[in-house]
Amino acid sequence: MADFDLNEVLHNVGTDSQYPMITVDQALELVLQHTPASLGTIAVDVADSINMVAAADVACQIDLPPFNAAIVDGFAVSELAVDDLVGKDLVVKSVSMAGTSNDSPQFSTVVDEAIYVTTGAPVPKGTTRVVPVEHCSKGSAPSTIQIPSLKFEGNNTWIRNAGSDVSAGQVRTMIVISTTVPPARIPG
Image (cartoon, rainbow, N blue to C red; front, top):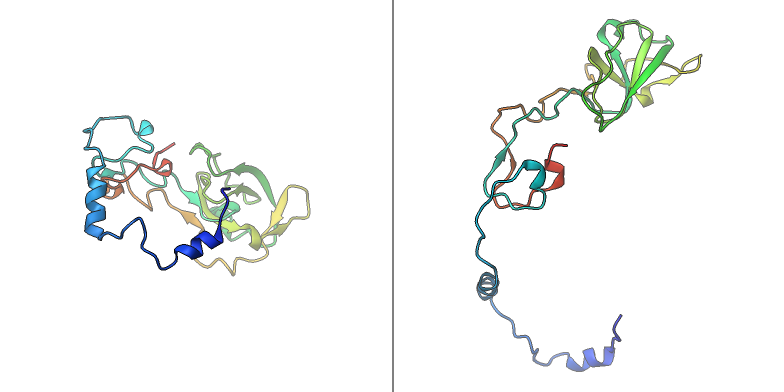
């Protein structure tokens, strides 16, 4: 770090600056004078557009999320099992993690099974409810859980349905003209 001389700063307090104040309009004019003109537009693959500036609005062409996703970390169960869940050991047969593909395991309709899912993860086909981890307890056998009560759940299934943010074909701009394309907006 450069030497800092407080006495020099204090000495200059109240004196005229070598950098005179200008108006906002003058500052804008200076910026525009030193900004290169547009280089035109080019067409690029979406994957190559990160950090480029959008020349037009970009609409979503797929469902977002593209699959039914868990809203919480928890255990995916099927509707066939909901009435028979409370107080029974449920074998945790697999895991669905956020960031994985939509090829989630086929959910078994066997009453004594559950699948652990993380927030944002695809829920297995046939899942109608995710019971949050904090509403579960360890089962009596290894690799099992119990759901002491569903009183906290009500009608909440803790699942975001495919297309619930944006449906394919829905007119909703995902990237606005003249903005930099962020990595989070590029499907992956």
